[in-house]
Length: 375
Image (cartoon, rainbow, N blue to C red):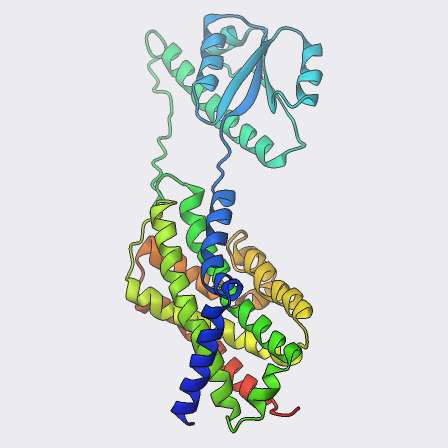
């Protein structure tokens, strides 16, 4: 391999990336842009769900129960109802997502040490919000009833301690359970597939415009040509890694606990695998439209749904799990999250790095093997 020839191709490709604003945006800036958009989209926690209360008991205890719901950050009491007929119009207009019905004798049952039968009606048209309301109301009601029973029995009740379970929960790496903290490092892996999509489009465009034929007619070897095309995209992708890391830390407040040089090294490993896949696809694609469609199908959709970003890989069927591990993004999602949030080192991440290295080397070798310098 002649390094002078490779350097000439690298220079030509780098000029092509930096000269065309659209290509420069697609390769370097678009990952940051996508990270900002998707980071905000995935950082939405379900809060302030509107809940209506129908209080048939009208005692101090039932009012305290309703007040506790209203004081929470998750739910808001939007109104108090008097009649059953008011429920349906309220849910139909989506003014409330759930209705809590406090039965007559609520306080009396509690003071007698018996949990009353509360009724909750949930609007199921939005399953996520409805499930959130059910989960919170279930937990809050259980805690409220236990406290009231304990208070009632403590002063003059039988000398039998009320059994209580104190559940101590500790959450590591993301103590506040903020979805943005967990999502943004994973999203970085998704948006950094843009250079791979760009190199597929670039080769398809050169084939359409006939400029690839000029390169083929030169004395360049196949390996020199393909490596020369690959390196500038790795370099511009690494610039995107720096920008995405800064956006994740400064804009979304994601902590970075690991080694940044290691993150850059493993990012280059990821680019080798993803760009190798992009180059291999470009060999068989003859126009830009098809290249765009195939790139979306290969990089973006599996990145979102198979990489473990949204659904855990352990919950997938075996055949889908196999498919997930064949996607470079799956390994990079784990690397990014582990370095950002856990501060993991190479002693933990080496299996993922090795998988990417094998993928990158194999795909690059296959690309060189299958690429034909023929018109």
